[in-house]
Length: 170
Image 1 (cartoon, rainbow, N blue to C red):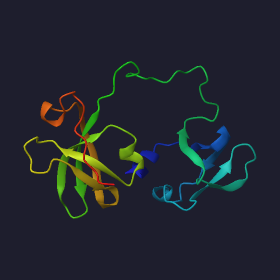
Image 2 (cartoon, helix red, strand yellow):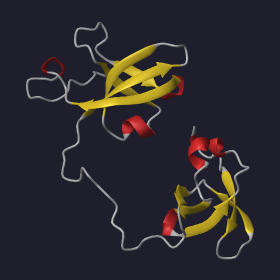
Image 3 (cartoon, rainbow, N blue to C red):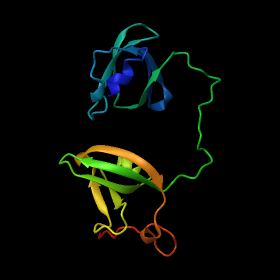
Image 4 (cartoon, helix red, strand yellow):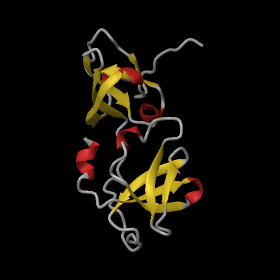
């Protein structure tokens, strides 16, 4: 899927490292892009735009790899941000497909935990379902699709309007 998008890429790229240092270069199309996110210091082979030399650039400390149209950029350009003033919805309605084939639709908290944690809590979309909460282990997820954003139903909130939280013994 990502390779389809890269067919239209003019092969320029910027790697942002910690400390805001930039490395500009042209990536080679013959490297497996799908493995870049693997832990353990994955690198990418580029021809540097400043020297023309080939270099293996470690992505272990990289913030991101930006695929760009030109190395000069557009300093006067202001990126579009449609929802700066809008309040974020507290939950995402998602469809999760597990490797064993089970599919569930649920509400997950609209927070960084869904992205950075190895697991997260989910609530059923149906307030009458037998499960009132699930703890989803991300390595067992085959597909994760955001269907909508939404607020909780009254039955999923306490008397103050706050989300009911799971009770975890410590």
